[in-house]
Amino acid sequence: MIKIGIRSLPGNEDLPVPKQMSKGASGFDLYAAVQEPVTILPKEWELIPTGVALAMPDGCEAQVRPRSGLALHHGVTVLNTPGTIDADYRGEIGVILLNMGDQEFVVRRGERIAQLVFQLIPQVELQLTDQLDQTSRGSGGFGHTGR
Image (cartoon, rainbow, N blue to C red; front, side, top):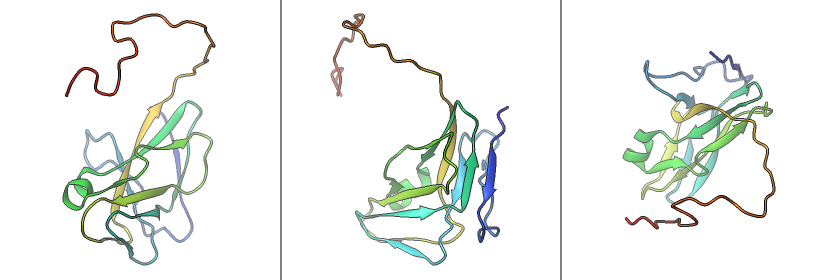
């Protein structure tokens, strides 16, 4: 098990610590730490604070991902999904919420707005080469296998 430090930032002690909502959940829900309700108009986005910061060990990342219920019921998603939180970042986690719906969406304090999924990152060394090995796919991309 990997232990990751989490800090509730001053003024946010009333908010729950991110947690998994079921035994098998892979994501930890993040909560809105807005002081006042924030209205996101259709086709617009806002940076929403969460009131928490992490201390992850090297070799880890946290990905900020949308919540499926917000997407399905309100058309609200995370703009840069997945948002990456690097192991050396110690600032407040922010979530860029995008309203793709046709009605305004109001974010209220304590509302679950996104989820964190933790990933292990392999150590990689890129090696410049003049030629790449061949595969059956080759350079085919962007729907080359059909719809």
